[in-house]
Length: 267
Picture (cartoon, rainbow, N blue to C red):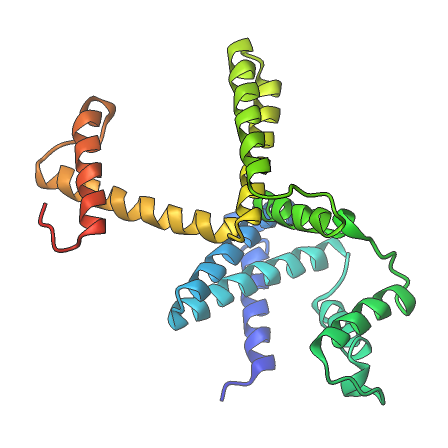
């Protein structure tokens, strides 16, 4: 088995070399701010690999996440903010501190009680101010997921529609307001009303017990599959993918839908 400590040291040494004055121009240019988008992108790719249960991809994507995190630690070290050892020491102390039933004398054998203890330690021993309700939802979540979690928290406190008909009516209302904003040609109003409409769509998903992230992921995959079939048919018929051929592409799109519903149908 490969030594885990040495493997991380190898990775960090490579990152340090890339960031050296005579290293890679692109790597040297990166800042902590730049790393945010890469971390988000690689995290999503890791989630996708897990959803697809692709073991090789999971291994690769976890490696990419470690690459970004290592780059962030190296940038922090160069800036004199903190060192990699500080990161690992802090998380080790936190894990030991928040698991007194494992590393201490307490006895807890219920997962929910473990979570309660975790939160209790955060507020009592660590002095963190506990946020409640909708305010406890982290702003770090992607907007769609954050909307879903905010709505769930609000619903727990009684602020909710009686059934799914409420958000359906709200969608109709928001759609009209969006149309009015578009007619006024005021971008700020259009953005606001579009946001309200999306929020209402998430509300319907919640009322129907549908995870909006999962639903949107499936739709993305469905679009990509159909679009790939359109590309194949266009190439097969020596046609370009461009606006002038939209009518033909639309016909191929409908063929792709039929093929999807009945794989035995030949196009």
